[in-house]
Amino acid sequence: MTPASNGDLQLAVSGLQKRFGGFVALSGVDFQAKRGERIGIIGPNGSGKSTFVNCLTGAMRHDAGEIRMNGQDIGGLPAHRRAWKGLSRTFQLPRPFGSLSVAENIYIPLLNCGAMDNGSRDISVRATAALELVGLADKADALPKELTQVELRKLELAKTIATDPQILVSDEAMAGLSHSEVDEILALLLEINSRGTTVVMIEHIIRAVMRFSQRLVVFVAGEKIADGDPQAVMAMPEVERAYLGQ
Amino acid sequence: MLSEVISPHLAAGRNPALAGARRFYAGVAAVTLGIFLAFHWVGSEYLWFSSYVVLQYVVLATAWNILGGYAGYVNFGSAAFFAVGSYTTVLLYKLGIPSLPLMILAAGGVSGLLGLGMGYLTLRLRGAYFSIATLCLAVLLQTIITNWDFLGGSRGAYIIRPDVSGFFASYVEVLFAVILGLAAGSVCLARIIEKSKLGYGLAAIRDDEIAAEASGVPTLRLKLVATTVSGALMGMAGAPMPYYATFVEPASAFGLSYAVNAMAMPLIGGLKTWLGPVIGALILGSVQQVATVTISSALNLLLVGLLLIAFLILAPQGIMGLLRRRGGRPS
Figure 1 (spheres, helix red, strand yellow):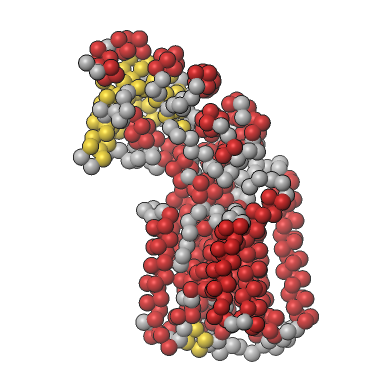
Figure 2 (cartoon, each protein chain N blue to C red; figure 1 turned 90 degrees about the vertical axis):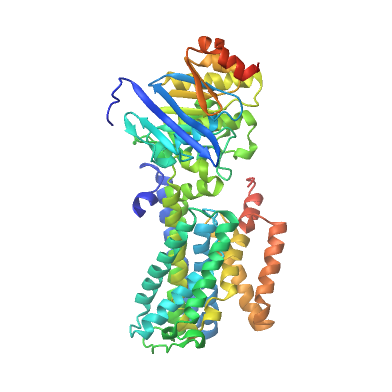
C-alpha cells in the first residue's frame, strides 16, 4: 500500500457525483477522513447521505469524481474489493443472511476479507470474539429471525468488526432504537474506534452524533454545506435553516 | 480460480470436519459399490434399466440444487443442459468418436460453457426474470437442434450400442454403472461445495446479494462457478442418454419432465443440503418408475405436480426440513 501524500489522510473523496435520471443526488461532494477519526454525517431526508455511502462503498457506481483510500484509487472497484481493502459498511435496515446462524453470518466476511493480517487464527475464534464484543455470544446458534431489532443492529456491526476494518461506515445504525439502545450502539462504535478503525457515522439522532463526532459534516440536497467542529457546525445559520426551515 | 474459491473454510487444525469428510467419502464409496454389486448379483435387466433413470435424476437434481438451492437462482432450463449433453454425445458419435468417457467429458465441457454463459445473465437478471431467461434459453437451443440436420434434426438420431463382454452382463449394466458413478461423483462435489468457502458465499448470495458484496463476497465470480458446475453436471447426466434410449430426438431430449423433475426433486427433498436432492430424486424417481409400469407413463408429470403441491403446503422445507423439525432443531 502506498502511503497517502498528505500524512495520515486515509480517505479522500473529491467531486463525487451521482445522478438518478434528472435528479442529482450528489453534486460534486468532497470528503476526507484521517486515520482513526470519528466523523458524523447529518442531513435532512433525501440529502444524499445514503447515496454517498453507497457510492463510497461500491454498492452504486458514481458518475464522476474520485475516491482514494490510502492514496489508491478505489472508485472503479466493485463493492467486495473495497471490503477486502478494509472499507466496511453497515446497512440502514439490517441485512443479515437469514438462512445462516448468527455465528455463520460472521463467517461470511471473515472468510472473504478477514484473516488477512493474522491468517493463522481460527475463524470460529474470531467470530466468537466479535460476537462477544457486541454481546451476542449467547445467540451464536440462533437464526437472525429470532433476534430483536437492536440485536440485529449489533449483528450488522459484528459482521464488520470481525474483520478489523480500516474504515467503518455506519449508515443509521441507531434509527428507531430506544434511548438506552442508542447508548449501547454508541458505546460499541466508540469501542470500535478505540481499536483504530476510522468511523464515519450517518445519523439522524443529533444527541448521538454530537457525543460521537470529532468532526461533523452536513449534507443538504446532494451538497456538503458544512464540515468542521460539531459545535461550530451546528451553530451555522445554513445548518439551522436546513433543519428547522426559515 | 476454482481452487481458490473452493478452499475449505475451516482453518487447519479442525480435525472433526476432516474426519467427517473422510467418513462421508468412505460411506459414498461403500454405498455405490454395494448397490453395484447387489444389482449385479440380482442381474435383472429391468432393475438396471429403471434404476438408471432414478440415478440420472440424482445427478440432475443435485446439479440443479448447486445453483437453485445453494445460490437461490432458479433454473427452468435444466432440460436444455441435459439435451446439450445428449447431443454432444450424438455429435461425437456422428463424427465417429464413439467413446463414452470422452462423450461425458465433452458434454460436461459444452454444458459447462453454456452454464458460464447463463451465469453472465445473473449480472442483470434476478429472481423470476432470471428463471424466464433460462426457459427462453431452452426454447432457443431446442430450435437450433431441431434445425441442425447433422444431428438428425427433428427426425432424431439413432445410436447403436457397442457389444459387451466380460464382467458386465449387458450394455445397460455398463450404463447403469456409469450413471451410478456420476451420481456418486456429483453428490461428493455438492457436499464439497456446501461445506466450503464457496458454499458459504453462495448461501450469502441466496440470502442477500448486496449484503454479500458488502461482506466481501465476490458474488459474480461465485455465481459463475455455480452456473458452470451446475450446467456441466447436467450435461454429463445427459451424455449417456442416447446410448440408454438408442434414439434421440429434440422433443424428448428437451422434455418438460427433465426441467420439472430437476426442480421438484430438490424442493421435495430439501434445498439447503446435498442430501435433499438425493432423497427427492430417489423418492420421486422411484414413484415415477413404478407409476410408469403400473398406471401410465403419461401420468408421471401429474404425479410430480400433485406431490409438489402437497409438499409446498405441508412441508415447505422439504423432507430434510421435516426431519430437522423432528430432531428438535427449529429450521
